[in-house]
View 1: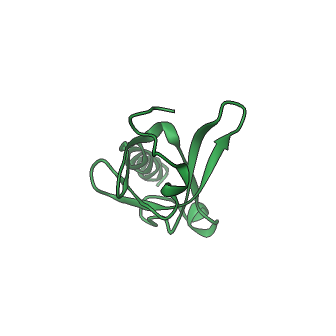
View 2: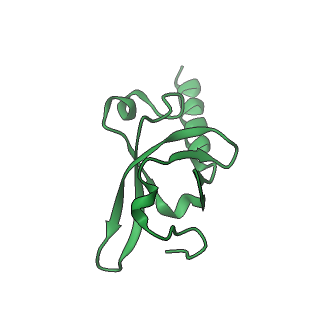
View 3: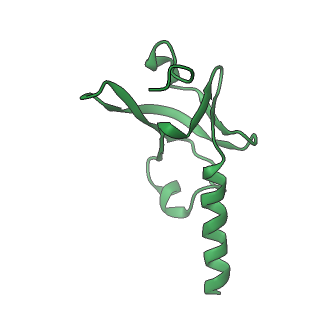
Length: 99
């Protein structure tokens, strides 16, 4: 875990809102994915996700898991890199090609 982005206690992440570094709301942290063998957070389980960023499959499920390596900063909110926005953009491009 990156000591610069790792919170003092991992339970403090639950309930925090997650935004991209561009300020786009992604979702809210509901739970954490842990690798107990190496004692490391590997992902953030998000709920109340931004329906504009994720397809209908994700919005009909309980949420999504964002890899912890995408986390840029942790404070009052969690900032992740903009890869979430790029993934959404790639989906739109594929839909336009298919049309």
